[in-house]
Length: 283
Image (cartoon, rainbow, N blue to C red; front, side, top):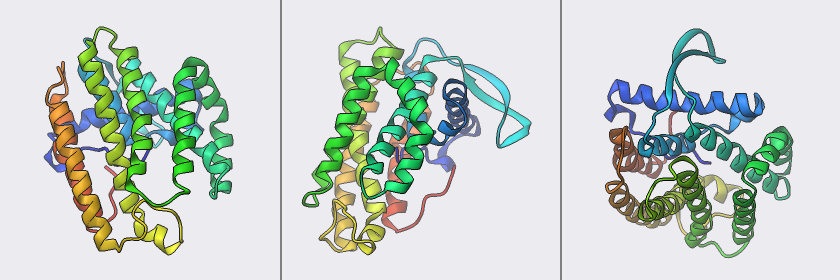
């Protein structure tokens, strides 16, 4: 994933940001326990948001446990534990990163792709045994996306990635919250698609100058940087408005303010930062 789906930290209460960090660390710990140390590289803000969203809609919450971290072994901090939303999101982080690395290994990013693919192979294959149909769908989607990225530059290619995230959100809803109505599952599927499109477009515009300099494919290639940013900005705002409408209708059990922050404040804040040509800071 890309790491753009994140909260607007200054607008969060301290306890809300602590909750977000606890979920992030919970996914990292879950990856470690299920798949080993190297796959922890796959943890991202995007899958943290998915885990928090599934927790927000679930009748039961995760356990909050004070634990140390591999990066800070001397100080305990709250970490979310023992919930299927965490294990599902951890598995999806690994699967997405592994399948993308495999694809990169066959593409122009051969060295990086091969190294990452080898490092995640065992974990990725393990996830495939748990989610064989979803894994096949994601794999086919990534191949279709890669093929589209060899053609004429077109922002509509974002829909290829949006279909991948739509499948992941739909599967997550069914795995974590099986009692949800068909209407809510459909809403989550659409939300995943729109978030996927938004993430792909913001990543493309963030990489535009680098891609143009390296003569690499970009959906906005052929436009000046200024014109590309103007077009992307309009497309992203449309996605944000639709996402606001969808997420406002979901029946949250908890963490609704964090979800609201990510969708209503976080996405626009990221967009504005990228449009200014600035790099995003770690949370």
